[in-house]
Amino acid sequence: MVPEAAAGDYLSRFESMHQREFGFVLRDRRVIVDDLRVRVVGRLAEVRAGQVYDELESLQCRLLDTPSTHRAFVETVPVYFQGGSRPTAVLKLGHLEPGDVIPGPAIILDRNSTVLVEPGWTATVTSTQLVLDSTLAANEGTRLVSTEVDPIHLSVLANRFMSIAEQMGRTLEKTSVSTNIKERLDFSCALFDQHGNLVANAPHIPVHLGSMSHAVKFQLERFSDRLHEGDVILVNHPQAGGTHLPDITIISPVFRDGRVIFFVASRGHHADIGGISPGSMPPTSRELFQEGASSMGMKIVDAGEFQESDVRRMLLEEPAQHPGCSGTRNYRDVLSDLKAQIAANYRGIALLGQLCAEYSLEVVQEYMAHIQRTAEAAVRALLKETRAKQGASQLVGYDFMDDGSKINLRIDIDEDGSALFDFAGTSPEVYANTNAPPSVTHSAIIYCLRCMVQSDLPLNQGCLAPVKVVIPEFSLLSPSPTAAVVGGN
Image (tube, rainbow, N blue to C red; front, side, top):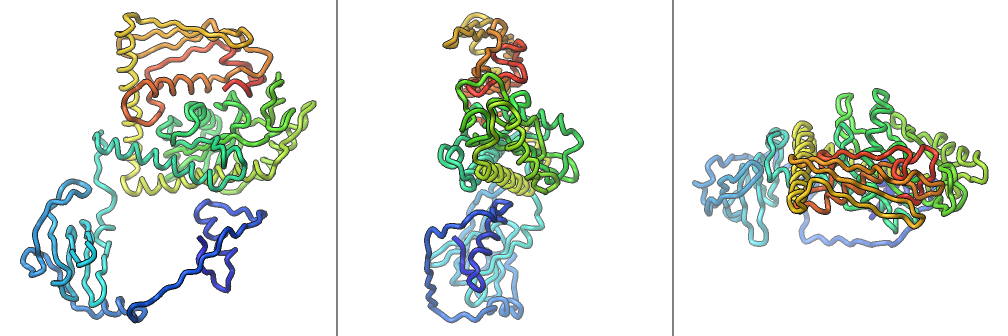
């Protein structure tokens, strides 16, 4: 809701709110007024503006160092705060006088409400108000959480990481315009550590989540020391960690003191990126160029500047150079959805910054590693249990595609819970579009392993730590760079 604006300029107020929340404004789009609300405020008593502040300046304050001796004291109860249980004084507001300052922790009871004064805060009683001051709390700094693994903090931070990914997804859903992303929800958002390992994700599209780490690591190696604060990378090529071309990944490095501390990424299936047919999902494609625009990695935002000319060249000009192909047939919507992905990443960066301010960077990074180690231990236990139940260290399976192509898999499980997933014997790539990039195979493996683990933990890179994957080159599961792949996932 847009509140009343000065001189009735609601559009400027709306654009300002949009910029603050999503990081950009679509100035070439019409704004629809969905509904109007009129709010009426009634006053029960006259309170002069600034009265409380004037009173505080002249008030003779008395700090209640020992609340138990005051006539407002009721009892002392244990209350659990950050860091453990603390004895907390309970007082009645009606027996407190203007000028009384109650240090936290404390509980103040009124006839119709209860006020909790947290540790590090104070509550000052005036003639009409109870004023809470967080000055002492601000001086306490970040939460005192050790970098040593603690089961409670592990669960709390794992859910905080997932919550950030979910909020990124909600931002993407709200700001996108295409049916694919806004209504069909064909998108995914995830967080990665400084090395590009998947840490946490929202429950979005499985084939996206297991493969995005490949895209992040590829760009980390590709750009190396050429990444700067404010950069955002676009990539969708199958050889660079992509799935099929309409799935465009937007990757944002998170910086602190000039170095990358995290990555956030979002992947969305775009309505049309060119190629031989509308929708960029041609059933008859034989070559990758027939499926639309592709990029091994480009900066869509360079040091905070949106590179629209490069985006236009990639989406419109380059695909149209191939015989029988066109550039994107809906450039405006694709461009808007790309900006929505950037906004989602922007949201993730802001929330990670808040998390680091709350717990410290060192703690957040250590718990990202703890979460991955926990997933690795769970998968190792699963593989050892599978070996014991089957009474064999080797599992073999195969299946056939409709065209007769064979997918062959042999799993060798060691005593320590490590495993080799060997796809030797899989058919060569086909001159059609059912080839699958290696990132898709890794997605299938990590998702299956996560589903088989009974523990409640986020899908992350630790699930693949005990696993080595071998895929024969130029096979159906590791095709050549020019092979069509639109139907492979």
